[in-house]
Each structure stands twice: as structure tokens, then as C-alpha cells.
Length: 61
Ligand SMILES: [Zn+2]
Image 1 (cartoon, rainbow, N blue to C red):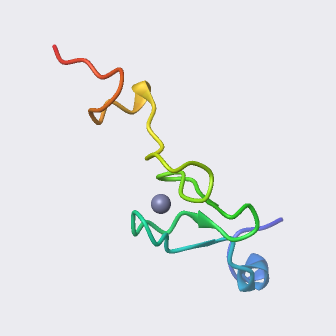
Image 2 (cartoon, rainbow, N blue to C red):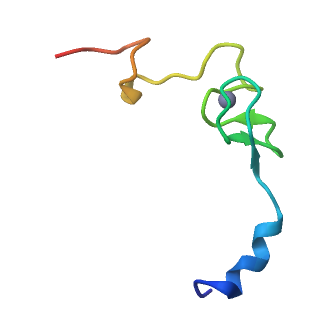
Image 3 (cartoon, protein in one colour):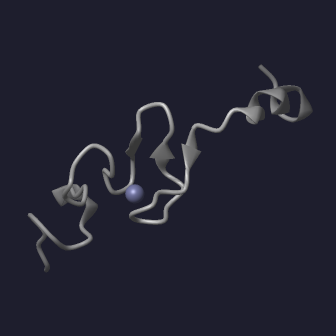
């Protein structure tokens, strides 16, 4: 596949839409879950220690 106009034809399918919970454009329409906050997958906010955004498992120097 080449870059540019030739590949634009595949952009008519949207995979993600804006998440109702976090507002990110990360809600997967087919999986029905948000890749940013985990909405649809878990009732808690999706959070990993490696995100280093605070929350569970976070540490500060
Ligand atoms: Zn979300």
C-alpha cells in the first residue's frame, strides 16, 4: 500500500468514536469498549501502573 490518496478510500469506516465517559476518541465501535478508560469493559477507570498518571501503583521520585 502506498501513502497518500490511494489509501484514503479506506477511511470511510470509523473504528473509534468519542467515549461517553472520558471524552477521548477511543471508544471502539465493534469491541464496544474504550481503549482509553475501559468504558464498556470495566466499570472502573482503565488504569495501568506504567501509565504513571497517578492512581494505582504509581510512584513519585
Ligand atoms: Zn473512555
